[in-house]
Amino acid sequence: MSLVAEKPSRPFAKFASRAFSVLCYLCMSLSISALIVLLWQVVQYGWEWLSWDFLTNFSSRFPQKAGIKAALVGSLYLVGMTALLSVPIGVGTAIYLEEYAPKSRWRTIVQLNIANLAGVPSIVYGILGLGLFVQAMHFGRGILAGAATLTLVILPIIILTSQEALRAVPSTIREASYALGATRWQTVWLQLLPAALPSMLTGIILALSRALGEAAPLVAIGAATYVRFTPEGIFDKFTALPLQIFHWTGDAKEDFHHIAAAGIIILLAVLITMNAIAVVLRSRLNKKIRW
Amino acid sequence: MPSFSVAPGNKQKRILEVVAPQTTARMPLSSAERSVVSRSADEIASSKKKVITRNLNFFYGNNQALHDVSLDMPEHCVTALIGPSGCGKSTFLRCLNRMNDMIEGTSVQGDILLDGTDIYRRGTDVVELRKRVGMVFQKSNPFPKSIYENVAYGPRVAGIRSRTVLDEIVEKCLRQAALWKEVENRLKDSALQLSGGQQQRLCIARALATNPDVLLMDEPASALDPKSTAAVEDLIFELKDRYTIVIVTHNMQQAARVSDQTAFFYEGHLVEVGATNELFTLPKEKQTEDYITGRFG
Image 1: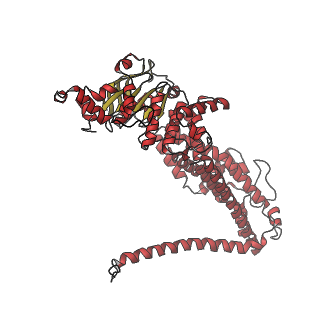
Image 2: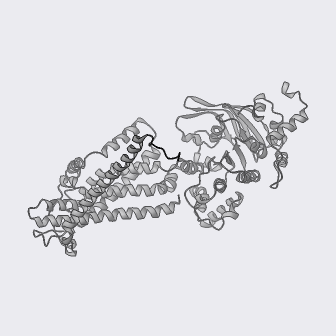
Image 3: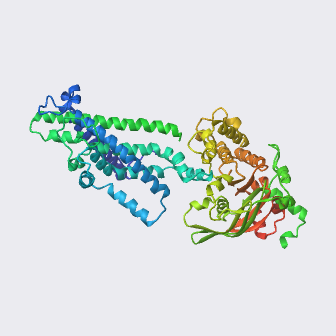
């Protein structure tokens, strides 16, 4: 048949195309398998040590009695306070930069600086937090200092993702709103923020997930690692999940390594829950917006 | 001038037929009848002038987009702005409700008077201005909210809170926009589920909700199919008793069908303005005649 060529035309192009897709597939498999192996190892190592006692006990010198309560509660408080501090400041900054600030050189400089700050290692923020919050403002080594430091860490991320979310709202919406006699604030509050909310929320929750996993800044401000109480007030000492895990991993007794793995499982569970909340909230808000 | 050597009667008929061909009556007034019912030059001259521009010059940075435009838009009339692409019609329209203020680097010289008051005077409340001068855009842009919320947005931002008052306004405007029958049972549905023609009528209803005096329409039917276009044109015809309408259109037949007064723009200059019947049959300027007979554009 004349349709079937005797000799394949451009053999190399076909081969290259096939080879490329195989290569991409291998890369994907590699990254996923790395993740799966990691998770599997952790779960295997710490699963048996997970128990209700583990969640409700405080840390102890004996691995059998050690629990994660102080760290879990401390982390949750920390994330909550960080959210309260970073979200209004971050979203407010994004609104100002996108909607109010005139296009000037000053604005470009600020924009550039924020983008740079997003890439600064978090230990630097830790040292800043130590000098500013712990010492200069006399917060002590309490949970407020920790939350304030973590706010500094995630603020650039929140500003950048919120700005992106606002930019993604079509400018026709703004025009229509202004043409109907709305003020700038009314346009932002009644049209832009509701439309940008799903994307903003995803960005915020991702930023908070990062804050949850940060150990370095908390080490820098001197958060405790052996704590046998839950914090009550904002200036109380505290510990956090990453710190506790880090501390246990460094212990000589091997049982503590198992406990650390159990702690990692708990940390992952909290992260997954946060992301699940983000997904649910986002789909609900998207329905409300009726794109 | 050579083009007027033909007997005026025949030439009139010829241009009128090119621009506004007889169509079978598919709605209350056919296009031919409507062009007769549109206001005469005397009526236009004697009407109160709602919006007046005097020696309007507009600049995008250093680029001059409008040169010395002086145009009167009478009350309860439809003024059509025609001209080839890029001649400044939309720029002119957007000056009338100061939407060009939102673009960086623009500057305005000259006067624009709404009911005798200069809208560019220092201290003018632009928010109030935009409530009195409403705008409908070329591509319909309903908010991603329900139909009810779209129409109620204007009154809401003006401060009206009462649910009953808002309900009344929404119904009244949707009726005026000839959309009520189609949506009265689904006001809570998303506005984006409506068809293109319905969305544009929704945008018109939305603009009417602030009870404006003047309605600016920037090529409102250009993105619509013929049936929806006819519906929008009928709407304009009915609305002009209550509002002053200024419409920008690319489509000369539409201008002839719908307007009382037509202004021809070319490269930022207002070449000619006159009653629609007269402009399309006996244009004074050669450029106008060339444009409407399709020699360029």
